[in-house]
Length: 340
Ligand code: SF4
Ligand SMILES: [Zn+2]
Image (tube, rainbow, N blue to C red; front, top):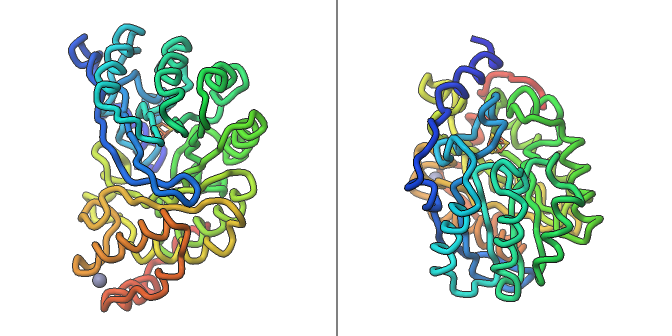
């Protein structure tokens, strides 16, 4: 099976059927997490809305993304979205940072219609200082962003899944719908409108070795930093119904080591200029997430979080464990992959 046909077969299998009204009235999840706005440590209110989900996940989808399972298989109506919002707002305690995710693009009209978008943003206006949402680059335009800018009194942050600045990595291994140049251009458009632009960079997409993926992220940090206000290194974790899971089950993929995250941050910190550099690994320390030996994982994850929140990367130099040598040796034994 070629990577191309594998991606399409996996996408076909994970597409959900159209959901009934009960599911559509409930958001997927909500929690509060630690974040920072500049040097200040703040609480962030995170909300995942249930929407139609990412259109690209239906066509082919990205090799590591299993978020289609949290979607409706049809567009949510404005009434359903209003009900999801009302449930969420009942739990909101004026956290200064708000993050709204949709398992796709907040700015895609098929997921969230323009009036619901405006209402959502307006709801947090005057209460949150910063509001983040994610989108594919083609939807980040003055037409979609302008009304939201007007509706929100604080700072809007637009997050883009750039993943890699290498067109081959992004197109052939991550399977994104657009080349890196479109993500960089979208970041420029966002900033030209006076909004914050954030990019995610993926550590260890399939078909890259551990060493290649570290090099790819570090180079991507250097190339993307001048175009974004913040960069987040996201190590792959294995989600259900993905190409990465298909490879993992056949012994052909290991999630990245936490040492690789540490290395990428240390190297990246010296090349990012004034841009914020963070990493908050999902499923860190678990078998299907980025992990080390099991003994040092909690300590290393804590140091990564501290570095991300405080923008102080020096403590990462002091980390050590016997498994670090194993990580170094395993990298020298890796089969030669495709140079990133
Ligand atoms: S990673 Fe983003 S663009 Fe790719 S399939 Fe998932 S939601 Fe869509
Ligand atoms: Zn260890």
